[in-house]
Length: 455
Image (cartoon, rainbow, N blue to C red; front, side, top):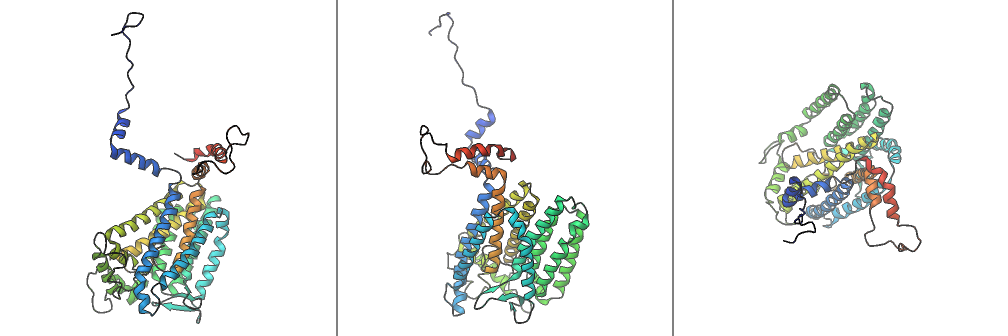
């Protein structure tokens, strides 16, 4: 062994050992994948990408399923097979423009639109009850004819109106420290919500009234309503709901069809509920194939609207339905994350209200198709056929996108993004005397915003 000049053997340097935890994570592929997924999940732009990507995927898949589920219905009405798809595609294009506009609006403009949207929704919902203007569809008088085959359901815009107006009202009262008093928390939010519910129930639309009630409770919960106050409002709503159900044979029949597996005789024949279960059961794991549904050939009523989830299960199987559920779960999580990380009270109430609206409506629709809830007649958000439901929902999605981008950490991350394809046009080398690239200056400006929670 060679020795040093001092005659002593050279000291062998040992490489430092990695900590046991880091070594375990690096050596275990499952834990490494989990750590990477968790790191990606905690990024500032996660909610932004989930809302934008999830809503686009749900809308596109909904267009495909509307085209598949509505062909037979259109042909039975002596219409072209793509009739309902073309109308839904037109509504999706208009809704995309609304979502893009809403995503680019500042928060002040959203708050300024709250009162005009509420006034317009109340005015149109009152017009529905006037003879010669309002029209009935499937026993519910909640529609206004726009000429030809185009109709509009004003109660769908009432959901957006309650979210924006309620969020603005609660935010202004919180700024003035008035929400600690129960009368300021309830008035005028609850009376205005009950007015909208009354206008909806005049037309007999119980499903939309349930969604509006869920939005009201969501706003009260976000405002920090005490348990006794929350329970009191819930009790009043429950009593009114029981009375409305008991006094309507149609609603009692829908309630009797929960869990039905065979058609019955009498008022509650449960035909639609049972054939929805048949469609889901015949789909298997991967479905019978796109366009190969049997139930849509006249057996399943409203196959392209309220029961489009059943046709999805029959044609795309369990894999397709779980994919839809996963997209809605991601959308709901992203909305909760936006509402929980913001410091702006209006953004918190509006994001929570929109998330409650979309999540509650999806749960009620899917629960009815699965036979776990009564059939309420509400469409699956962004998925079912219906322009009146699609337009305000896409505007609400634009709100969530705007709120997700307005987060300080998300703004900093967006400012730090580098050009994907090399230098920008006109950029010079380091010795050209030009100013540094714009994204470099953005990085320096954004460094101060990282204290807001960016990881």
